[in-house]
Image 1 (cartoon, rainbow, N blue to C red):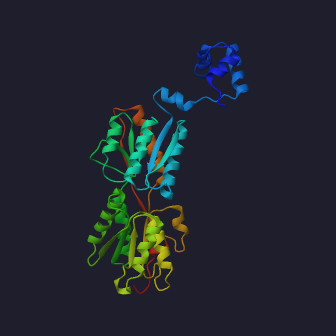
Image 2 (cartoon, helix red, strand yellow):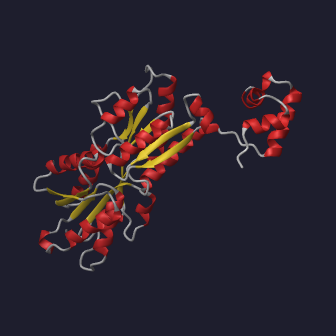
Image 3 (cartoon, rainbow, N blue to C red):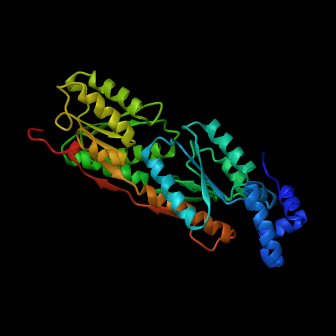
Length: 339
């Protein structure tokens, strides 16, 4: 049986208002009454309903975080950073996984709005940010995570993904590779489009270099493996000699596909570079070169920016934070003799 405030009041022989004061404003109650009510609470096992109390007050101690794929270690680390900063302020993070689907993103936005969260951190599925702008205009601060949009007034924490794509492919070209394949997810995802743009810039700088784009349905290991099998099935003279994958999960899947065929070896036949530098990247059968972005810092900074938005809703603080990516070179892109 759930013990109510009325039960506590009856056991302590006081009014419901007195119990409320003991819970929220004990300085207004005599020490003897506080002791009597506290004893009744302990004996009955009463647990206060903070969620209901916060909703009545029109606010909560929660922040919402919606990511593209909660199974991706990159987003897991973003969430960890967000939780660390939120905990410092006595708040909690509610996580939603859009699974790269706009309908799920919309459903989470409505759910978190109803729960009156203090704000929403979100990595959007596509470029249509109308729902996020409406939420912001309704008084719920919105922070774009790993995403930036100059066309809206939404605050953001992101990484220069165009530069990241450029770094990845410029590195592949520096090893003598010329036939580059880009394995990406849907180009409606801003990060994928930006990384592809950077890749194209790098290729345009080297005479004779080419770029083939392979668009997959999702940014997952399985989709990476399917793309790798597609490339593995080509005749040797038709295969690319390097692959840039839009994230490490795609790269790991492609590496799995290449490893199943002894006459296609990484990096001898195909050099491979991923993106995110997840922990697993250095532990693959051939350690994976990758473009590192500071996942934990992105999450931490996003919550920090949200707290500033709550304190200074009219501005007065930096609202756009952009980090620079870093190329981490490992064995998967090592230069080979005879190329």
